[in-house]
Amino acid sequence: MIKFGTGGWRAFIGEEFTKDNVRLVGQALSNIINTENAAGNGFVVGFDRRFISKKAATWLTEVLAGNGITVSFIDKYVPTPIVMFKCRDMGCQYSACITASHNPADYNGIKVFIEGDRDADEVITQKIEAQIDNLTLADVKSLDMEVAIADGKILLINPMNEFVDSILNYLDVESIKKANLKVLIDPMFGVAKNALQTVLISARCEVDVINDGENPGFGGLMPSPSAATLYRLKHLVAHEGYDIGIGTDGDADRLGIIDEKGNFIHPNEVLLLLYYYLLEYKGLKGSVVRNIATTHLLDKIAADHGEKSFEVPVGFKHISSQMEADDSLIGGESSGGLTIRGHIKGKDGVFASSLLVEMICVTGKKLGELLKEIYGKYGYAYTAEGDCTFKPSAKEALYKRIYEDKELPEFAYEIEKVSYEDGAKVYFKNGGWVIARFSGTEPLLRIFAEMEDQPTAEAVVAQVKAFLNV
Image 1: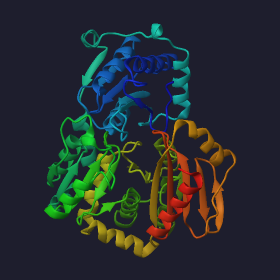
Image 2 (image 1 turned 90 degrees about the horizontal axis):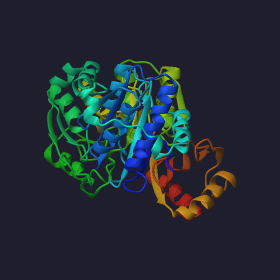
Image 3 (image 1 turned 60 degrees about the vertical axis):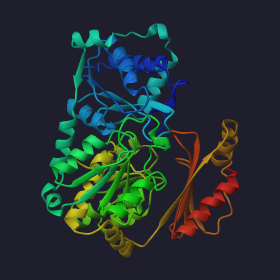
Image 4 (image 1 turned 45 degrees about the horizontal axis):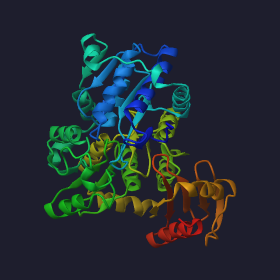
């Protein structure tokens, strides 16, 4: 079974993520593209540093070429945002990157992008799944990579410079140059180093890098930038005098930030910082789009500046769609993904990190100072998180309790409303909230709560865990 979740198709290497299944995805995409006469502007394929990513990119590309589709193949590992950037640049209706993003090392997968440089929505992924259901390996057409290159059906490209230049053109480079910032990057053995280091060095930052190099096991850690996984970055930033530490996930579409004191800046706070900076210091206008599990303090910043805030389900494709509908200024999620109007519509850790560096330089304020300024104006809120594993046999019963029976604990706070648009989200009248939802990328039940302080938020998460027995 090949099923696409909120961030593409992801599966265990050697079990579901196999050469045969990658080729089936390639044939399904080819059938859709040819049926829709969508091959005119070609197809971009990229890959990250995961185990067999380059081979899988080759398998996918050979099938596309075998079906008469000209493929622009990025022949070096790159951040996923570069694939989306090139997709937009070429006007492709479809493109793809071989990656499992922040998932554990024994996963790999395929992210599919559509016209408008954004993640494929459910309509497209359901088409792909429906095609696969009606295919066998005998239906797969393929053309050897070397033969296809010689015939001009596969074009080798490297859009790194174009991507870097697009970020530099957006930034206030002169302000960054004057600040002489000292930056430490942790790409978590992923693909961010070349692009992010080039941007920052071009702006005359002093840049060092840790946890780089070929390591398909990601050093034994999840390639997801969190307070737990960035412990080395936290230590070095605090003790070696860096102005900021930047961590990025496996394919560099998410980020984790460490301030000058070695404190982890939660992705919710990154969104608060950037939205506030763009409105208050840059004088820009526009609404904000957040997913259902992201801080409501964004709503207060928006309202204070006469702007709207939109809540959408989890999955960056929903953020991209709503941003396009309202010409929003910023969109993001509590897991560390965000984008800004004028850049690509998908999330980009390289661009977001670069803009945070600009923010420090333009304002002349440390990250902690800016957060204190924001909390002084809009109040404080703390987000607690809990990821719960469960046996596959238990999912049906959990699903029934949450979605069908709509069972809830006896909370100590008065409930304003409950939404089941994406999981079960309880909105409290005091402004806090809690949500329980199944992950779209891993076998997990995710619980988030935002309350007025850390103990209260963590207590609410613990209460939901105990109630659901997870």
